[in-house]
Image (tube, rainbow, N blue to C red):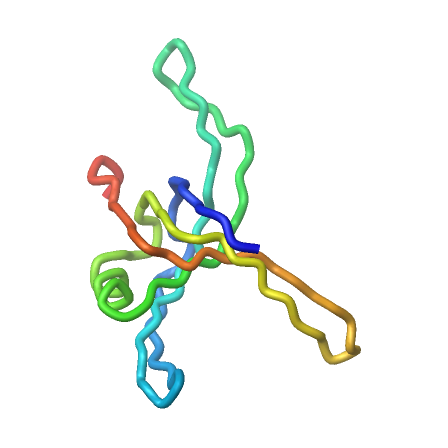
Length: 113
């Protein structure tokens, strides 16, 4: 499953940067754990939370370096990327799956730094 993903949320943890060997080449990946909320603006200019969800987001190569350098726990970000479904067999040979975002772009909300 492959879909376009766009959402706004806050980093729940500090980003982590790793180097992975892929097809004989070292590539950098930054992993984020983001809470994507549904804040609804009210008539009195306050917001109420209408639910949300946690999602793992990965950025690769030059964007990985930038994300690791610029983003901190709590930063509010706009993320664009591809939603990917991962599937695997666990230790009991039962099929497991999850969704994650392979990030293409991120923008920091400067009003929330």
